[in-house]
Length: 321
Image 1 (spheres, rainbow, N blue to C red):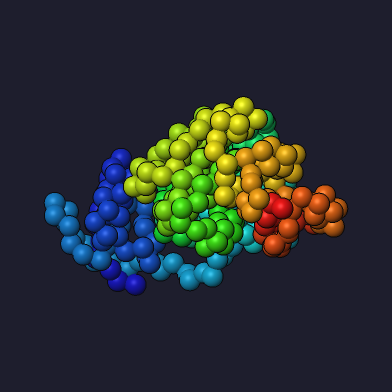
Image 2 (tube, rainbow, N blue to C red):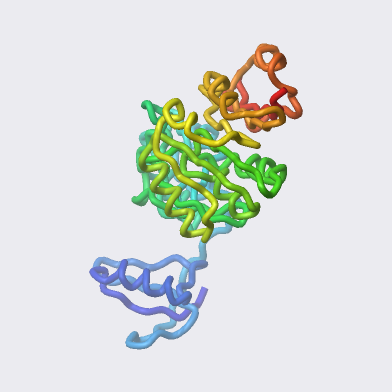
């Protein structure tokens, strides 16, 4: 395909490419031609200080997803992930070990397919006292990003603070149930997505607690980004700070593996009619319900998303009796 182009010394290639992207004149539908010393970059408009050429370029093949850009043995194609998390400009995925030798190739394909992303990393599991994802970069670099969902912006580094974009719909569901004037305690707030969304849309007072210093710092950034002033970030262990807080109209307990262990603590800051949003990963819903029904009216429950072949993440909306 014939296109305008500029000739660039390879020493200045990355700098020039970024300039063209910023100006919006890079022709992203055509492949760049690279030689030993120079590259010809296709453009859609002229640019000062560069001689303009007309050349025949090869067009990129249209692909439905990133798999069309991955060059690995055919018998391994079936192992490529069909889903992955996108947090701001960061892609996080899980890879079977058979694909580890091709990790960089897969990462590059994802970045080529998702032009607005900057980093791809393998999720090696959630570890440590602060329950943070262990991430290994396979393409790009840098984890700090601004994630956008439901009309808010969340500052987060997924290597420092656990964050799941898959809870976006759940966060909105809870926000829609909140009334103006409520006092809310977000017991394990992380980077604060529940708190930020609610505070942005409702006239409430929120106490957001986390013992991870990075989580509280990102929450403070998000408070400024979203121009809100009705969240009180609290760095500390809920065991130490809950008694200092006022009685709540609503409590959020998003710590799925451990939240059930803190239900008595939540009750200390509850009153009759307080609503608790409890999240649990389990394969035995009936046992969970039996343990809750003596002290709560279960006014809602359901699956948030699958977690493993046997377990799902559930929400339980509870009203204190």
